[in-house]
Image 1 (tube, rainbow, N blue to C red):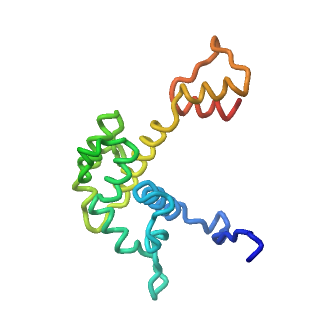
Image 2 (tube, rainbow, N blue to C red):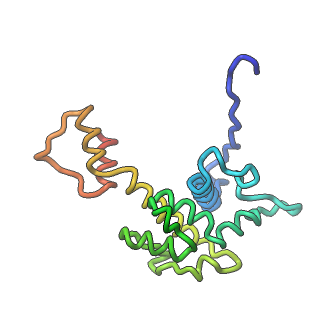
Image 3 (cartoon, one colour):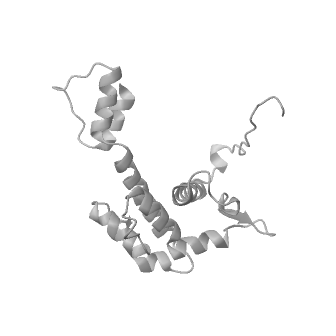
Length: 181
């Protein structure tokens, strides 16, 4: 390997019939949350893969990952970064993150029911509530990173744009317009 090449580990590719979509959603969501909470290159090695397989070939969430979700540490770290929370008033606890999101008009809902701190502290872990929290943090991240104005500016640089035409209503429409142009 002295030639300067980089080696990547490629996960096994499964056929569509054998792909576990819910596991993939949980794994990707947890990986994203940890990257935001710790920093992409600073996720502790024992947390990079959130699951382990026991002697009976059953997959489980690693106990340290579950403990971090229940303690709100990951949510507070990611929320502080994404929501640019004041260092003098750091986010402490699930409820603080839920409130900070709500102040930006983003509500943590699981099947149209508001998620509470109690839902996020339940044992065994209520994964749908945690996924709702992570999805809402992802939406907050998108809103912070991508705006209609930024996307319109980018489109105007590389493509003829006619302001009299359809101006995107929201971020999703703006992203679609950016992709289409």
